Length: 437
Length: 170
Ligand code: FES
Ligand SMILES: [Fe+2]
Image 1 (cartoon, rainbow over the protein chains, first blue to last red):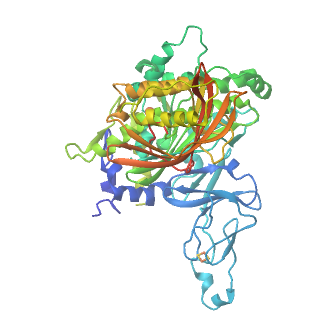
Image 2 (image 1 turned 180 degrees about the horizontal axis):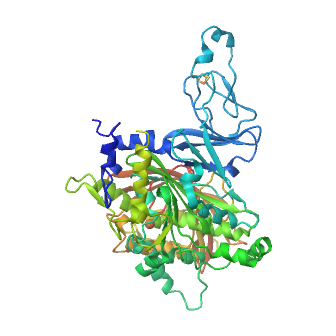
């Protein structure tokens, strides 16, 4: 049954000012339309250029559900290619990442391609003479994603020609990337430590929304963070607070803490929590780090960079970054009810190792499939995915601290427990879903 | 359910059989969800390590699925008992199948004994059941006449795969 294909009005009707219809989470048709329209109309994160440092290096990932390759071409430029052979569709690369040398060679019939995707050679080429091959879909080689942008190492791509250009799409939100990169004394990040991959039986948007959901930690995470606080209370007085307690205990902060932390709203669904402070504000200083930053930037600027304590910055459609601890999570859609969550970590080049050590501890304590905090969250997502099949109420409520004039506002800071960011994400969802329909 | 209390070591230096019995007992305590007794098998400075990478050597600057000291393990055990631990309502159950542990090294002078045990581990909750295969390395030593775990390392055969929740202990 198709209700939504080619029907922009029906799609728009799914998103109201203060509530959204459950079909945005459970309908497989809506999911397919997201993959066909919303993701291709958006600038989607592909990978970090430190994953492909040398010519011929590649890394395979997805934009929505489409397989793509991030590859460093012979001229040093990073390209994004559709990862399918123009001949019969075979995925070109065998490993997730590696070095292909000067060209890709398809393992099926040995067509080969330069690292910008263009066709290099076909065995028995004669067989294509006088067949009109030059006019075929196969002739250009591996199709490139045409719109690619490397922002301070973070590579984004937009599949469709329409939509917004990069600057317009992101606007002022890029300041969160700036702050994350500036935290390196030499202004450079490197992917480090390995990626945690966690399978979720729920819609990808539940994860995106959760990144700015500040009314859930003290409730859903009472079991994990609350237990940390209780167990820590029993430690003998004077015991040095372990890094793990510093990381998990702030999840139990009271509502006022989150109300006062603030949320900032930018255009196109982007936004961040932690305008004034965040759960990352009170980490112990890492010896030697501030001196390095001062030497690189001068004291005032170093202080300004490190005083920025943004909590979660959401980039529509499907990533979140934590600048203060150099972490990026991508919510990769697989089906309406299935999402792969990848949590990536970065090393601040030329900064003390202890920063990476803390980042990795945060990642495994909060984002691993073995993480007790992760268990708390996934349980809620899966229950929601199940509960939404009820016909008793077809709407999800996103009304908290709603104000009727908010759709026209942007670049504003509001109460940290507002559901404005979620409403804002859905405004962007409607925009990029129906764009050009 | 019952299993006799841990037998004291007969001599200062454990026999191979005593090492094997200890490793088998650890798995049984997990299966029977006797987590307080289980935690007692760990030395105060023990670590439970589940690498994320194949042949991982560094737990500090390479991420792991778990790299937890006794404080974090005790937090897990407390959490499993919690009234508001919703991901454990209903509770998970688990089941270990062990190959006979092999004693890889014994160094009485250094008070260090290492065993190696291939396992199959099943974890189940509601209608879901997952099977994992792993090699478990136990680094043991004797403290006050009892064996204790200094390091338990669990190498999953598919350590780099995308998993759903793994909520108990392998
Ligand atoms: S499918 Fe790639 S060469 Fe034939
Ligand atoms: Fe959470």
